[in-house]
Image (cartoon, rainbow, N blue to C red):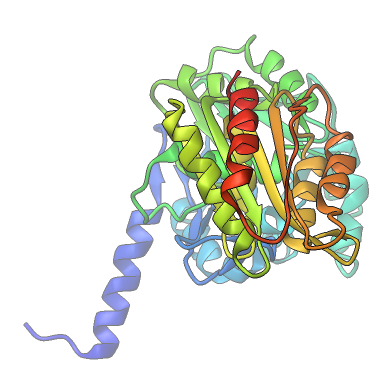
Length: 406
């Protein structure tokens, strides 16, 4: 049997639809969508394997839809929802987070199902008109607070507030019959579900860059989660987690405490003409010669900034090397340190290498930002390179390596 190009496209769409609609439990169905066309998540994070916008529907005596998706994928998601409903109509739309990648389709689904009630935190209910000024919410919303419940029949949703994980209106939902935690952005990752990749690296990059600033609120949420009997975690990005949940929760605990995950040294450099790059790479060789097992080098002018930030948080030590520029520091390094500062970088050992041809200023500029970090230890032996690396500079690099590794 031969299919026309048009029919082949149709068959592919049907196959993809079947892949995306799947049962999590007997009555909980995944209806999310993959976005493999997006290049930058939040217009700044490179996502080579796209991203998943997760949504779920609970089909009990009452029907609850758990979050929507980005407006980019509204048509596909609405088809998934209709297929999963199989002729039924939703009673509730539970909105756990108002960021547009999860809430972008609220107005459209409300128009599609005019009898459906929107359930969200009190703060989210107040914020809804900010995003949907042309939608009439009066009489169609229910604000909930910590400990409130929503009976669906055999199943009941229990709501826990999660402010600043990572917006102030966020809440999570626990379904007690199937022991499912709908965790909003918690435990999410970059990458479409159609991409088979390891969870940890892209989940770490997602957490550090999206939620990294909010370690204390994440810790508060983990304490709430510790009181629950959780068998399944359903995040709004990334795969549903059903096994070895202690591993994922343990990483979140470590990340949100800002504790190093792995022993090692990140050498991040910002070089104008290549001389600082040569120095940084030589320093990495010295570290390895002294027994450092994990030495990761990032060229901040060319690398994915979110990956450099992720690695800085992952490893226990950081060395920054930069050229002086306009009586300050070369901008890629300033950008990197700024990213670390706004994500509450802490609990690390830091070394500094500066380069300058007549009046080195990079070291002082970097130290000014580093001094805003909490609970860091800065090596006393800052190394100054004058234009190019010379044999006479090697002993200073050796001393810095000893301090960093001490």
